[in-house]
Amino acid sequence: MKPGIHPAYRPVVFRDRAGDFAFLTRSTMTSDRTVEWEDGRTYPVVDVEISSASHPFYTGTARVLDTAGRVERFERSYGREGSRR
Image (cartoon, rainbow, N blue to C red; front, side, top):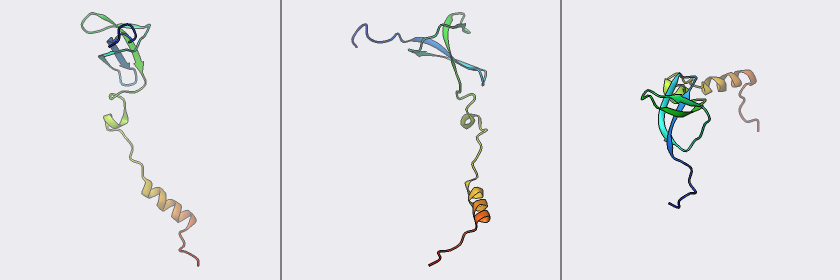
């Protein structure tokens, strides 16, 4: 790699406030805020809106969309008439 043109790749804590979950990984993200991690070191922390701890798909709280019921309600309201030729 060409020296001096790539951002620093270092340990960063990503924190999901909604899921009360944080994980330490490596990233090029930067932040002015820091947090003391379990190992006693201080790392930059990046707050994220959603992660696997709070996403409905991963938590099992995803709602199933009832498209068949919606179609049936529409047909009941407006009636389904065959072709009028």
